[in-house]
Length: 44
Image 1 (cartoon, helix red, strand yellow):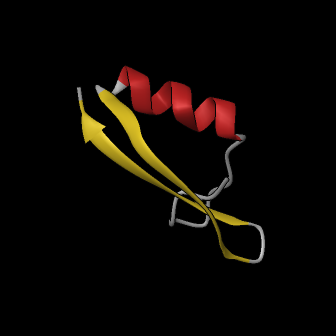
Image 2 (cartoon, one colour):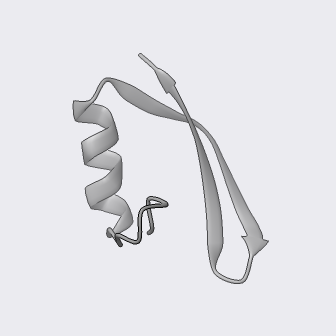
Image 3 (cartoon, one colour):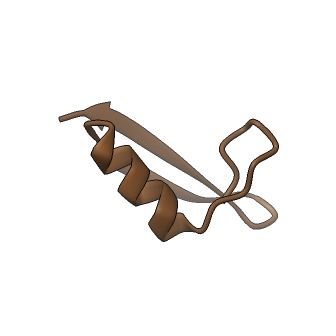
């Protein structure tokens, strides 16, 4: 999973980082491109 800054993360790692930062995934939108998923996040 990429974060938009040329850095790749496994999805489990990124989800853990989001949680530690006080966010949760509000919506998970698959197939927006070849192998791309958009995560819409919100503050807890």
